[in-house]
Image (cartoon, rainbow, N blue to C red; front, top):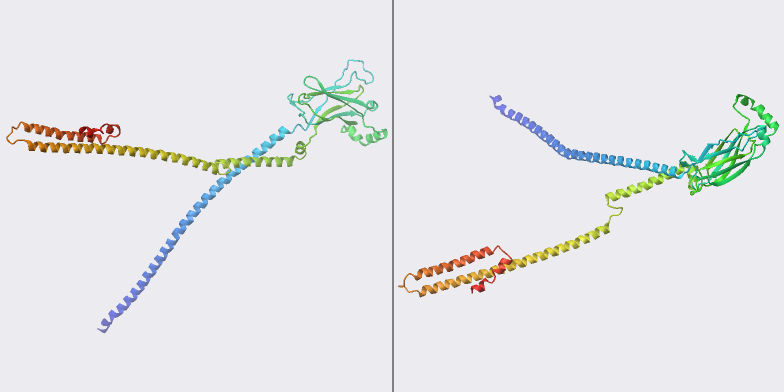
Amino acid sequence: MYEHKEDPPQRQRSTGLEGGTAAQTRTRRRSVCLGSDTMGGTMGPALHWLQDVAAVTLLKARRTLFQAAILFCVLLLLLWVSIFLYGSFYYSYMPTVSFSTPVHFYYISDCDASQSVLCSFPTANISFMKNERDQVMAYGQPYRISLELEMPESPVNEQLGMFMIKMSSYTKGGKTVSSVGRSTMLHYRSSLLQTLNTLLFSPFLLTGMAEQKQLIEVELFSDYKTNAYQPTIGAVIEIQSKRVQIYSSQLRIHAYFTGVRYVLYNFPLTSAVIGVATNFAFLSVIVLFSYLQFIWGGLWPPDQVRVRVMMGDNTRIQQRREEARKRMERENSYKDLDAKVIGSVDAASDFQRNDTATELSSKERSVIPDASGADVPDTKEEGSHDSVEPGKRDGFDGSLLPQQGETALRQRPGPWMSL
């Protein structure tokens, strides 16, 4: 029995302990849930913010990359155009630097020539046209013209001594514009020097790799300029000697540049860099101005133009407001006039009704009781006529109410006429 009596307190204690532990676990779960909720509540906006920032950053990066690609393409196009313009300028401004053509001499051979003597002077005709269309020499440009003669060291040429070379340039019509003559000869070498040279170069001479010859250069013109009105298209070269012996000859024309052409020819790389950079800067400025014109409407915002336009708009707005105000005043005056006309018509109709009422009352008082009923219909007819007349007038006035202007003015003298 004792044990049975003490069981409930123990059970209560155990249940209390279990309830306390359950409450603690619940509070812990609630705290964990609340912590997770608070963490989720704080992490949610942060994740959204990070997502928005990432999207905006990606959009900006994409836009920046697209703009950079467009800028690179534009700069590459400008660079290519700058190089093309400089090349076109160089090709059109710089004349032919040098021109070389072989000279083939001809002479008469139908005579009795003895002892290696020619029948006439060797002569050659040279054309100064390239492809039979373009001229070799530019107008106003100085040129150096020289003739190279390849002559053997033969006893005939050594005994020849000095001889003359004549050059005559002509125009399209065959007119001689300039003529010049120069003298030349072989370079002197003693017999001992010739013997030593022959012994030293004998292997090359035997194999054909070297020859006993001299290259003589004769300067014919040092500063030749062609005339724009009479351009030179050719020249005749004549060697005034019948005993001369020649292997071959070459006519060379070399331009002697001054000023900008001198810089372009002697410093090509520096000139190219400066020219391309100048063209690139000029084209960049043009593209920048075009971009500003397209985006802003000009390099500087047109404030003055905007002020003028706004002033013009204000004047127009004021004019429109004035016209609207006059129109409203005119309409108000028309409405007042219509109201006055309608009021006068109503007053006239009321006055007529009062008159008919007084007439009826006076007639009823003056009627004799034993009189025949013949007069009653008359009074009724008159009353009905008089009573209908205001109705008609009211109907007429009612039809007049919605109308304005000219109809109302025509009905205005009604009350005075009824009086």
